[in-house]
Amino acid sequence: MAVQVKTQTTVQTAPRKRVGILGGTFNPPHLGHLMIGEQVVHQLQLDEVRFMPNALPPHVDTKVAIDPLERAAMVQAAVHDNHLFALEMLEIQRGGKSYTYDSIIALREQNPDTDFYFIIGGDEVAYLPTWYRIDELINLVHFVGVNRPGVVKEAPYPVQWVDVPQLEISSTEIRQRVAKHNSIRYMVPDMVAAYIFKKGLYLDENS
Image 1 (cartoon, rainbow, N blue to C red):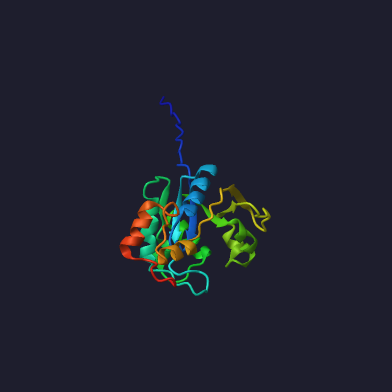
Image 2: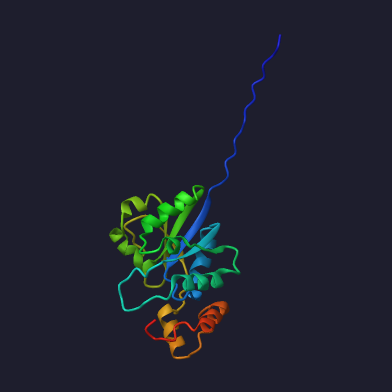
């Protein structure tokens, strides 16, 4: 009489990736951006942080951002030597104005095995209720708030806070310094500075 032996097959699923997204105009990227990425990736133990330049600046003002591909090239120059950082081209490839909701939907479709952590400034947290389709967005992504001195850690939606040392550096100041032929050393990575000067970027104060 034959004896049937039942065997159990254990299916092991790969752990989901945890990826931070830091969006912005990056006009140009500077050490403050890298500091945020560094603190978030380590404090939240993420697999990586992707820096995602937008195709068009989200705010209506007098500043005209330089070509998106130029900004992307500077981001790549800024992050190339950190294996936990990467350039995300989704919004530039799509073109036009991008809403965070649309970008996260696209990222999730492209990366079904990944949980995304969207990084925003602590002062932006209070404005989350005004974001496009925010009530759906909060179910698609984890929000990470950059905590700095003076920021009130109150949020209308779930937010994970990360303490980040404050660097008094802004892209606006960098552009102004370049236009006046002043040094931007120690404000941007050396390769970003080299790219700016090689391409002759920001020599017009209105750029």
